[in-house]
Image (tube, rainbow over all chains, first blue to last red):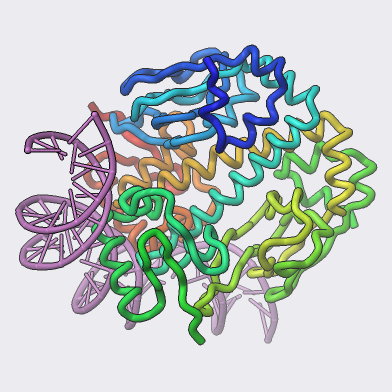
Length: 205
Length: 205
DNA sequence: CGTACTTTTGAATCGCATCAAATCTGGTGG
DNA sequence: CCACCAGATTTGATGCGATTCAAAAGTACG
C-alpha cells in the first residue's frame, strides 16, 4: 500500500529511510477500534494519516479521561522509551494510521542522523505549539484567546483558517456559539477584520 | 559558580558531558531583565534553575502575548534549530539561569549519544505532559479539571501537592477561589479525600 | 433532492471571575 | 520571644460571560 502518497503534510515521514519504510505498515481504522491498551508491551509507533485517534485512561470514578486527541501525526511519542503503553488508544473517527516497529524506529533514530534531527526538531516544534496552546487556554475570555491564536499561530497578524470554525472553536476551548459571537463582537468594535477564511488583526494604538 | 548543586531536579543537566558543562555559564536574573529579543541571533540555550522567565510577543493591538511561562527547565527548545529567536524572553521573577552556547549544544547532541537520548526523551515527556494539560484546560468545569489532573499527573488516583494551591489553581486555569470552592464541594460529595497536601480520588462505581 | 453538517441567532441558566475582607501561615528583624 | 509583614487560605456577595438548549438558514455532497 502506497501510504506515502497520503502523507504529504507529514514532513517527518519524508525523512524516514527506505529501510524503515519497508518495515512500516499501513492500517485502516474503524471507529471504536483499539490500537493498544494500557500495560500492553510496546510494539509500534503510530502516526495518524486520517481520522482521529484518542489516548484515554479510565479515571477512578469511572469517567473517561482524554489525554490527547490526535488528528494527524505521531502520538504517544513519550511511549517510545518505555516498555509498555501508559494508556489506551481508541479510534474516535475512522481513518488510517501508519505503524512502525518500535525497535526499528529506535534503531533508526540512533543510526540515521538526518532522521534523528528531523525527529528532534519535530518534538521541539510540538513543544512550542503546545506551550502556546496551554497559555492560550489559560486566558479567560473568548476574545483574548482569539487574539492570542492569531498572534501566535498566524503570520503578520493574520490567519487563514484551514479547518471549520466549529473545529477552531474546539481548539480554542470554546463552544462554537461562543466563537461566532466573539468574532462578531470583535469585528464590530474594529479589532478584527473577518473576510471568509481570512481573519486579520487591525493595527491600533 | 557551582550551578550543578542547584539543579538536582533537572535530570537532563546530569547527562551533560564535562566538555559542554565547561562552556555553560551561570547567570543570576533580575525582574524585568531581558535575556533575548525577537529577531536576535540565536546564541544560547537557557535553562531556568530559579525564578520565572516568560516568553512573550507583542500583539498587533499592543497587548502582551505570553507564549510560555517557565519556572524550571529549558525553554525555547524549538529555537535550537533556528537562526534567530522568535520572541522575547523576560524575567518575571528573579532567580537564575544556566546558559549554553547554542552551537556547542547542537554539537553535543550530534556526538554524545547518551545526552541525545536524554534530550529526546525529555522532549517526548514534555510533549505528553503538555498534551494532557491542553486536554485538561479544554474541560469546562473546575471539578472535571481537578479529577483529570489527579488522574493524569498522580499515581494510583492520588497526588501530593508540591506547590501552593494558588499556584495549582493557575496551572488548572482557575482562580484560587474557584479551586478552593470546587475542592470543598468534591470533598463534601465524597468523590475526593483531601488531607493537607495529599489529595485522593475515592473509588466509586 | 435529500441528508448531514456547519453557520448563525436567540433566550435562559449556571459557574466562574471578580471584588472584598477576614484568618492563617511562615519568615524577618527588633 | 514578640511584633510585624507578605503571601496563602478561606468565605461571602455580585455580575458577567460562556454554556446550554433550541431552532433556522446556509452549504456540501451523494
